[in-house]
Amino acid sequence: MQVAPSILSADFGKLAQEVKAICDGGCDLVHVDVMDGHFVPNLTIGPVVVKSVAKASTKPLDVHLMVENNTFFVDLFAPLKPKYISFHIEEEKHPHRLIQKIRDLGISPAIVLNPHSRSEDLEYIINDLDMVLLMSVNPGFGGQKFIPSVVEKAARLKDLILRKNASALIEVDGGVNDKNVHELKNAGVDIVVAGSYVYGSDDYSKAIKSLQI
Image (tube, rainbow, N blue to C red; front, side, top):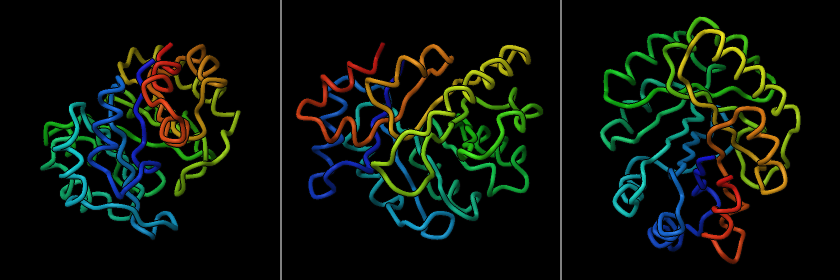
């Protein structure tokens, strides 16, 4: 299991140190939540701050867009060359077009599904994706409780990936901890995002390793 700690739960007063700490602690990716105050009722960070995050990080960035006007934000963050840029299917009228745009920029494209969205809706684009991010909380704020139905959803998505002979990884974000990570692993999840669990611990390295099962 790969682990992508979310910097949403970090101490922004010492953000560079917090990013360095999770990288030194053995994380696989650094998860960056970009919220615009419109698609979700919260406002986080823009490319100027993320540029500093990228500079401090020794691991690839995983940029999760929770925004309206996805194409505008893809253009803003693409110059930072994250490994992944993910966008919400609920907010995109032409997902296939945006997937190709992200890939043409040399970045791995990913789609996000909110808790109520169906994994079956990805059937005709799953082969074009490098990752699918399943939200196990409603997007917008850290520290929320894990929604258990995402385990079954992940298993259905894994079945779809295998049936279509696709190579997309499955990522889960929200309320992940050492208690539910085993269920997620068994359902076929490849990457977990953990903000509060990692940054709320006394030992980042120990918390990260407890999820790398």
